[in-house]
Every structure is written in structure tokens, then in C-alpha cells.
Image 1 (cartoon, helix red, strand yellow):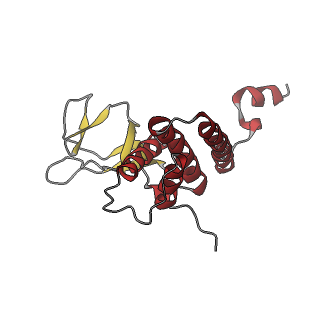
Image 2 (image 1 turned 90 degrees about the vertical axis):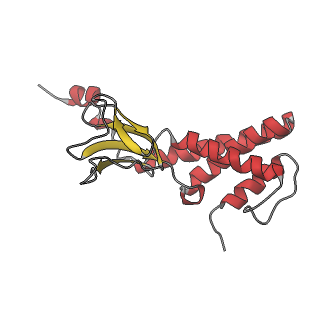
Length: 188
């Protein structure tokens, strides 16, 4: 049966890039290579997701608490951009309005949000890309073999092509809808 890649599969692929043996569990591992691989996989995943893709970018409305007039911060948020020209940031466990220098919100706030998604919940092509990128970084930091690096770079190129194709497939792109093209098509 064909299944999608798991975090364990990704870690084992990273370990193989430095010639280490695969592991069967990740939780409570004391193996320093496993610990470093997991940390690096999360870093790379967050970096890739920070760009915002169809699976983790959305518009949300956050409503302030009725009593405190504060909006609790969602720890899965990677970036947040306001729709009302205010600047909002995380302060402690709450959303803070930098423009008005306040935690207090009278109305709901609409924002564009990029969320962090757990590795196992990523689309398959992103799992492959994150794993390939993390394997290159892991191998470069802890082993640094040029021939292995070249093989990993090839895998990364293929994975990058897959995420570009995924992104194009998920968009409703039409060249005829571009401003410059539609003007040329207008007949007078």
C-alpha cells in the first residue's frame, strides 16, 4: 500500500544523508542526530511555509473577548497582515495594535494569516520538498560530502518543480485576466 511520507520517514531520509542508521521512533529519542534532524526539519518547514501557500494562507476575523476586549494570540500564526491598515503583532499571549498602542479591540479584526502546519498535514509535494531541503542542510552541517550533496541537490530540484506545479494547479490563473493583456485584447 502506498502511503504519504511521515515525519519519521523524513527524519530517516535525513539520517541516511549522513550515513546514519534509520530509527523506528522519534518520541523521547536521545540520539543527538535525531534531535538535530527534527529541529532542522521544523526550521525548514517553517521557512517554506512562511511564503504562504493555498494550504496555510487565509483571511480570518478575530473577535475580541467580551469582558477583556482582548484577542488571544493563536500560536500557529507565522505571519499576520491587517486588512484595515493597522499594524498588529503578538505581545505576550495577545494580539497588540501597534498603530493605536493598545491591546483593547472594540470590533472584530480581519487579517490575512499564514499558519504553520504540522509536517504530517502538509501536502505530499511539500513534505518531499521540505525533506529534501532539510536533508541538504543537515548533510552540509554534519557530514559535508560533495558527492552526497550533489545527489541531494538533484532531489531538491525535482521537489521544487513539484511544488511549483502544485501552486500553478491550485491557482485559477489565466493569462487573459492580466491587466496588460486584457487591455490589448480590447478592440476600439
